[in-house]
Amino acid sequence: MEHSPGSVVLVDDFVPVIDMSAKDSAGGRAALAKAIGRSCETSGFFTIVGHGVSKDLVDRMHATTDAFFTQPDAEKQKVANVAGVSGFRRFGEVGEDGKPAPGLYEAFAAHVTGDRSDEERAKLGAYPAPWKIANVWPDTPAEFTRTWHEYIAAMTDLSCDIMRLFALALDADEKYFDTKFDEHVSLVLANYYYPQVEAPRPGQLRRGSHTDWGSLTVLYQEDDNGGLQVLQGDEETGAWRDVPAIPGSFVVNIGDMMAFWTGGRWKSTVHRVENPASGNTTSRISIPFFYMPNHDAPIEPILTDATQFEQTTAGEWLANKMRIKVAKTD
Image (cartoon, rainbow, N blue to C red; front, side, top):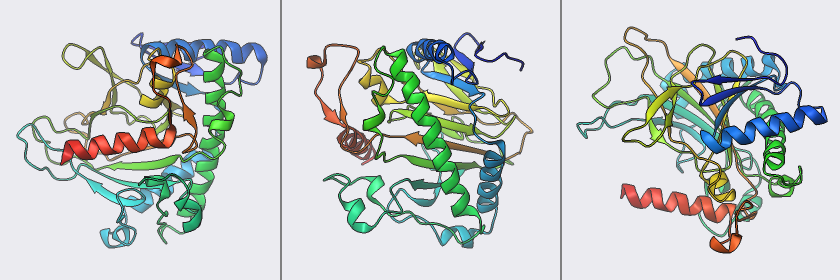
């Protein structure tokens, strides 16, 4: 796909591809903010190129993550999580018949706060929260932990800049969000979708439909190996739109918190991961970085009369989301 610096290319007139290479000029930032704001008001999704993240780092992140997931189960189980968050997990989706299905993907997760001391993590909110749990790092591959730390740092820098463009798009001071993310509790998650050598059950997907909960997600999709779909319209009459895996790009979307933060003007959109086409038995890796504010950052809409909404904090918002999810599955 060819594009000039600062250009915007529409995919299905719904998910734009935005070139960020002009982000360091005043005029370029204004144009980028306008394009991003327009996308957040429609689909809440856009793809970025020209973002400045090293291809070498992205390649190393993919390679070391793939090496982790493709090693023997005994090695992965050494870092299986015991608290439902950090470390290794295996998932399954339930088909339309309502019966448990074999796992369609595995995951490994780590929080930016997970390497802090027990005492420091205990202060991150007076409620159970995943960012208060210690990270569990594997011994193999040997470069895994170092590479993940490098990737987290790069995603933090990129996400900070995107949030500044969000602020400009919302007609706020460019650094409006800075103090709300200077002690962020973000999460990086790697998903490994198995090669589908057997046909899935009716209604069984690699990843079912959902919205993200936080403020901003930056997603790496394995080059030329898509599957991500975004819902245009409602779940009954809407259409699923493919989001291509463009080499060298990241997919960015906002979550429920950001939709609330804008008083509903910006959209947190339902998305899913579709099964590969029949005969395609390749695996797939995706790595979302969930950029989440400081646990005690005040959250209230900035595009509407805040008196219509109850002010909360980022930590309370996310903890409540988790409580609702647990209640629905009980």
